[in-house]
Figure 1 (cartoon, rainbow, N blue to C red):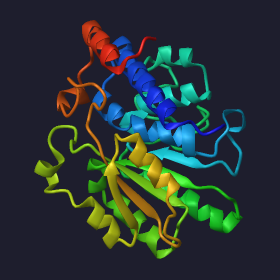
Figure 2 (figure 1 turned 30 degrees about the horizontal axis):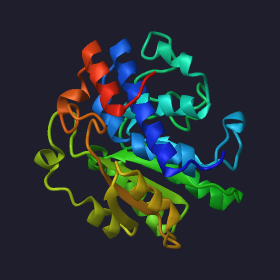
Figure 3 (figure 1 turned 90 degrees about the vertical axis):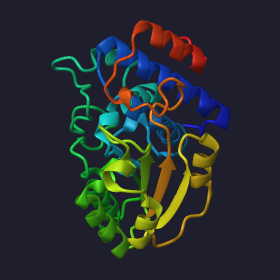
Figure 4 (figure 1 turned 45 degrees about the horizontal axis):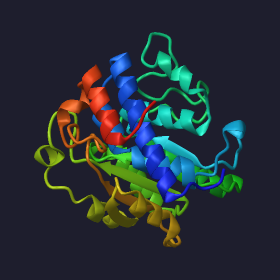
Length: 275
């Protein structure tokens, strides 16, 4: 696929947000705020960066992406469908009994484009580390990207994997931390103290950067810059929960709340999207 331009990426992000909001309203499923905060990084990954082909989704040299914050699955499913991994109409069954589209990603054998079943927080990075390590053993040629939540960085398994990745100089591994400053019930800083994520990742031996994670231009610069050889990369994405819709932004009620018909219309108006 030809890499999309900045303007095209922004349009795709607005479309994805609209589809996620409509899906939440129609199916009565939560985690809307957490999905919206990570749309921009997902759009850039799937329409600009990842070496993938929906028609050859098992290619051993494909890049791997793992959504470790599995409660953002509704965003990933929509973007995979937009990228051509399956029809958008398949998502009409989202959240229903027996559907492959549950509130967290399923095992990879069930859906093309899914690399790991996630949602039990703290497991995505260890899995991604194993995949990245395998390239050294099997002489494959692919990169691994993992998306964590900032609250997920409370898990000890994240830091065990971070330590191993740095010790083994795994420089085909990139971690993005969706730092929207909220956990399920409260502000992250009120639960675990002031955030020092950039300093923590640096202390574990990673190249560590911090950007506005809802700014497409800044995200693109991450992929255009020359990365530090011999170091895994951690990028702290400063995001807004509910990003893209003014009355949802930084409002933790949208962790569980479902938008009504009027709120869907208002969202579409703000996003400038008609579906």
